[in-house]
Length: 135
Length: 312
Image (cartoon, rainbow over all chains, first blue to last red; front, side):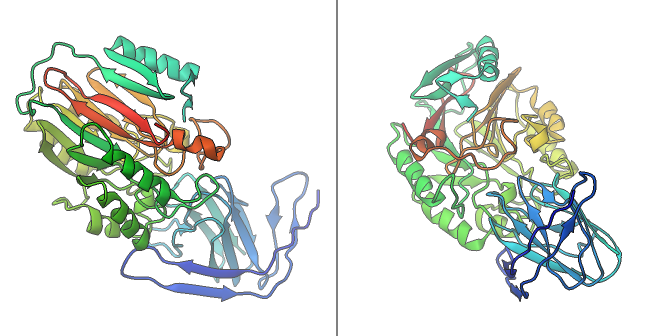
């Protein structure tokens, strides 16, 4: 099975929760296309080039794809398609990345520089887990 | 909702029958099941006012939620507050069992507080997991809870009843269930030790303190330890929110009640793909939202409980 999914222009505007510290991140990226391949009915896995937009979709209390392969230097963008807010928090004792609450259709982005496995979860619904594999 | 109250599911019917056997009278009125605890000949409550003592539970107001399931959770909260003003017996106080806000934003907390303060009585809060995102509840506690305990839990006495506020939405475990933690359990044991077994107890926390549906995180992993401390009391009422529907259970002298939301309903346990907001036709929404009144009367062991939907 082969299929191609276009990825559209990504504009990120994220707000940090809480009272005192509040910041705004705004990232605009050029429109381009990433191609997703899957073999023999396996879940779609991405192996796009480093400077293309890469998106993990949060839908029905799950990260999709749950395991996502990217090249070093890739910016991964998460988008929440649920009616329920979610977060994206790396599963380290001191989180490498931690999103503010993402309401419906809000996005969060993080650039993965070093090769490795980066497990993460939703701190509101910790059953929701995913991993970014950088290689 | 846990099925249509006018056509209760087998699950609900069985729950009601269990409750009936334990001395609770169930009436379904206006599409809402109401549980009335029968007087079991228990002792008179010495510290209880002669006219009884009434309070309210309000839950899951989710200010900041604007979705298909409810275009404006502020409007429905205002309707709930207006209902409070029309109750036959004014409540002595209100318990809010969490998810005051939808995404822990300061402006959501402020808007919720503005509307809720319009109800009049004092409000005692516990946080939901939507209130503690990103800051472990710091902004929530600063605004809503004056607790001497660093974890935000507390207790107080009013109308002859001992109220215990527990926090089970911090440091959530990988299974997604609530967590009380060692320090809070230790505090609870000490707090209850000073009370006589005839003191009516109300425990309130956001996530259910029994496993309603662990696959969706609808439970609290270490709640059995807390329940063990409560078993010696003659009347224990456990109030929770989180699941946006009324589910009740009786275990000895302990009754467990989850509450309606004022913002949006959620599906019955395990129904549909997940626990997201349940979208109903707009005309059905008011019947799926509501508040709860609890009324202690001298001579009755537990409170009479009435779930009042916004449609009543």
